[in-house]
Length: 389
Image 1 (cartoon, one colour):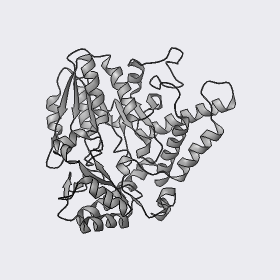
Image 2: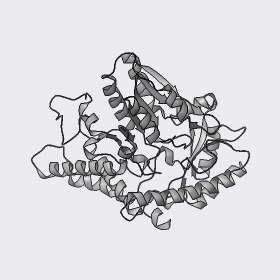
Image 3: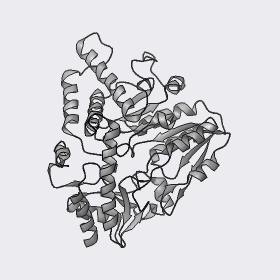
Image 4: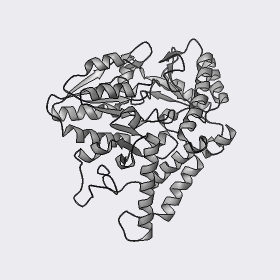
C-alpha cells in the first residue's frame, strides 16, 4: 500500500479521500502525461507537421488503451466531454432510428445520466419509457421484473453495471442476452464499476458501454465503447468538413481534449502496472483488497447507522450509502470532513434509487467509497467517527 500511495501526490497528507464514487485521485504518471502532451504535441489533427502527427498518435493510442480497458474495439471508441454528454448524443442518434410507440427500458438503480437522455428523446420522438424496479430490501436490480418489461417493441435496455449510490452490481450478460432476444440494444453505464472490476463489453454482449476516466484515476473525459458496426450505422451529427470514417470517430464533435486522452492512456498504463502488465490480474488484486476493506467496514459498522444496500461483500462494490438517526446527511458529511474524512452526501444524481428509498425529500444519504488506495487505517478512522457521532 505504501508503494501504491506514494504514486499519488494527493495522498501525501492526512486526508482520507472516501469520495471516490464522485471522482478518484490521480497518480503522478497521469499528471506527467497531460503535461507532456501539452508541451510536445499541442496541435490540432490533420496538419502536415510534426506536432499534428504527434497529436494524432495520442488519439490513436487513446483508442487502443480505451478499447483494452473497456473490453471493446478501438474502431468503436469515441471520446467526449464526459459520459453524460456522450450519452445524450448517442441516445439522440438512436432515437432518430425509432418509430413512435417503440419502447426503452431504464432502471431504478441508475444514475440519471442513463435515464434523463432516454426520457428526453422519448418525449421528442413519442417513445415509451418503462422503469425496471429495484428490490427495496437490498437495493439490487430486480432482473426478473426487468425481463418481464421486455416486449416486441423494446428497442433499448439502458442499465448500470453498478449503482453509484449503493454499489449494487448487475448481471450485464443476462441483460444483454434478454435485449438481443427481441433485437434490442444493451446500453450500459460502466462509470461506477470501472475502478473496481474488469470491464468486458464484447464478452458480455454489450452494444454500448460508457465510462469516465476520472473515476478510474484519470482526467475528466467521457469514453464510449460502441459495437463497431453500430458506430458506423447510427446517424451522427457532424459538421460538413468532418470525416465520416477513421481516423477520428463519427461521434466526436469538434476538437477533442488530446491532453485528457493522453492522461487516460497513462491511467490505463498505471492500472496495468498493478497487475504486472495485465489488467485482468490488476483487477483481481484490486477486488481482493477492496473486499477486505468492505468486510472490515461492515463488521465494525455501529448498529445505529442505517445502511442501504447489500449487507455483505458479494454483489457490490465497496461503496456504502447510509444515514445516522437524527442527523441530516449534510451535517454528517461536514463533520466527517472537518476530521479529514471526505465523503459525499445528497443524491449523487442517483434520483431513481433515492426516490425508491424515500430519501429524496430528506437530503438523501451519506456515501463513503473505498478504492484500491484506501487503507485499513482510513476505514477504521471512519468507523471511529461514526461510533462517536
